Length: 170
Image (cartoon, rainbow, N blue to C red; front, side, top):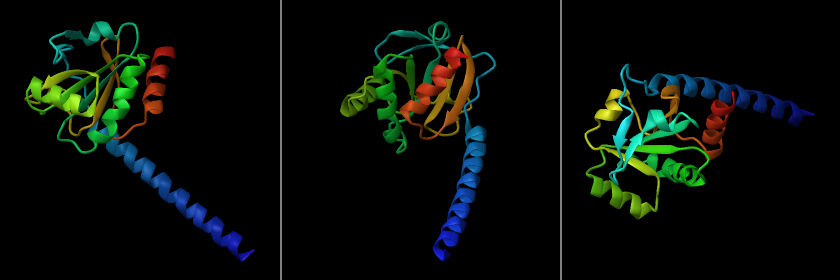
C-alpha cells in the first residue's frame, strides 16, 4: 500500500516535470525558428551546379529545407535522419550548409559521412541570416512557395514525415 502511494507521487511529479519541459522547449523552439523573409530568394544553385527552385518544387508536395553546418555537433546527429528522409523520396528535401566552407569542402564532408542529400552551400551565412536563423539545425517546410512551419533542434524521421504528410493532406 505504501509503495503504491509513493509510486503515484513519483509518477505525478515526473509528469509535472515532463509537462514543464515540453512547454519550455516549445516556447524556445518557437522563439528560435527561422522566419521567411519578405521577398525571399527561393532559387539557388546546389553544390553540383544544379538550379533548385524551391517555389516550383513545393507546388506538388511540401519541401523540407534543412539548415545545418559541418561544424554543428547536433547536426551530426540530425543529418543522418535527413539523409534517410531524402533517400526515401516521399518528399523533397533541400539542405543548406551554413558557413561550412567551399563547395569542395562541403562535398568532401558529405562524402565522408556518406550523406547524399541535395545541398546548397551558404558559405557566408547570408541565406541563413536572411531567414533570421539563430541556431542549427533549423528546419523550414515550404508549400507552394510559402513557409508553413519553422522549427529547430533534434527531430525524428517519423515526426518530420508526419509534418510533411499532414501539410500535404490537410
